[in-house]
Length: 558
Image (cartoon, rainbow, N blue to C red; front, side):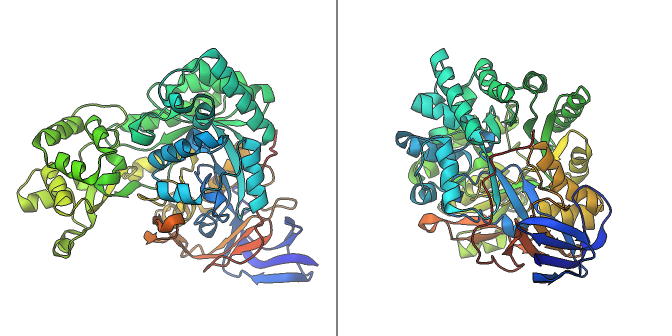
């Protein structure tokens, strides 16, 4: 008798083969049979008219802290994700001694748009080493499967404290960091991650620690992967890091290297194209270089006091830690507006916003008399008021006590260009950033968006290929064995959905973080069930109350 049989589904095997009508039998958490099944089962699901696919493998998330208070890693499992990789960009929370906890939390709150209140009140810090962090997750249980990077900024902070964001490391400090990376890999890390992005700022606007690392430090730490003969390297790219350097790291260590993020920017369209084409060229030379791309537009909801899209501007830095009174005084100041205007017009590396006010809309006003402005772009608001867009933008926020919420469309808004990026052989569709930027966005439903928008609505991909790109491709590239496919012997991570309706739902705000803090969320559309290791975790409407079936993955394919 099988534990579970899903009958009559259109089965997508995750490998890109055509769909076929079949039953799928599950026993002991693994797929036992695919075909016509007459054997009895403890549970039988009628899947007539529905597609059964492997669960989505999300390789770019930031659930490191959230998993210590939310074993479900919401909302990802409801959105079809059965495996998450945490610790990207170098921002793991382990290793971390007690004296570094608040510094790690403050930096994480700033760089990943998380609530510091939620991090301080919710994070379970009953660990110091990376090994102990993985042990804590095992003890608490996890709903999705979890693999974790050991992160450069965490390692640097443990060795150097506050000075990690101030200076280069000396030889002894690099050696100490290297020992921590060795320990993390021995404990079961999936690999090592870092960031050189000039948009990655910590508490008070300081550079995140990894940005201060010299190339020799980075190479020393990544070389641990080469010596171990396993592991993947993920890097969020800044101006100092070229594709040539990353390819040489891949070649020197025999490890796959994933560069983040190839997002189309209308102001500099060649950047993302070069990142993806360089990756494809490296692969022809036998070196595993990949560019992470997104199938979603990068848009963010923000109020001025947490304006991530503007924080890379030099004129904005003094406002990051300003209290409301000082903040409002500065944005009313004509000299500040002059500096701000100059920054928008001047070439500056790392800018997220280039002054296209047609892509910034009023999302929510604080005053009832301004409700008619909601949904209006700033350029239209300026035209209506006879003002310069910068003046209209700051005047409205000042009038509403800094409580006005805006939506900014930053990158990936040209879908023809985005499709070109996704189709290139050097690309890997990912970048959900699950668990991060909760004030501004919720992109955890990227997989459902690919299946609904790019497959059904645009016809850019056929369904089997899109499913392959979300499942077996990332699983295989990240050496996550026996996942991302429907085949006898594979782990029974499954997603059942209606191809005619599948989509990510609209954004909504939930007040469910520790301390009553809020975040943006999305619900699934057209999802009928999600299973992790054969256990039903989401029924299409809500989470199913079962023991947490996910595993902390600490062994990987060669």
